[in-house]
Amino acid sequence: MKEMQAIETSQPTVAPAVHSRQLGAQLSGSMSFSSQMSKEDEEMSRTALSAFRAKEEEIEKKKMEIRERVQAQLGRVEEETKRLALIREELEGLADPMRKEVALVRKKIDSVNKELKPLGHTVQKKEREYKEALEAFNEKNREKVQLITKLMELVGESEKMRMKKLEELSKNIDSIH
Image (tube, one colour):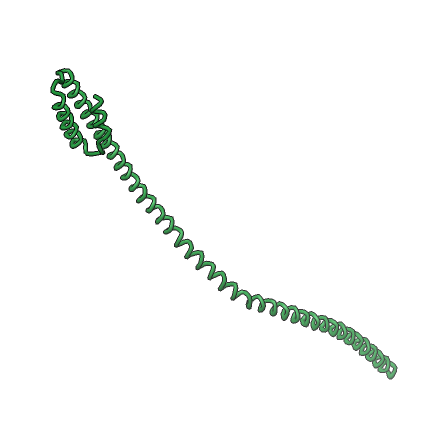
């Protein structure tokens, strides 16, 4: 049994089937050294060899299970990576048109601002002209009112004078008779 442990630990990692054959050859070789091995020892060696092969098969089976799980995980990771790449593309696709539209609207705003500046100056100039024209209009209107008032006074005086003259003429005519 100690020989088998020594053989197991001294063997490099090899494929399980090759390792099992080598172990079997070494054990059978070591059996030839002790020709007086009893049947119990032989049976123990076979049992140990069977146990070893069973362990090797179990290890190989677990290794394959783990390999399959790793492959499955890698498959899921690849799928998730593709899904994330698609999501990123969609996000970039959403961001691009918005940026273009925003840039376009900003350019339009700048253009309108450039047009508004001279229009604002024109509005201010026209407002000044309007105020000046309105002031001139109001001044002329006041002057007109004053002239109308003066005209009314003059007409009123003229009527009085004419009436007075008519009365005098009428008295003169009456006095002639």
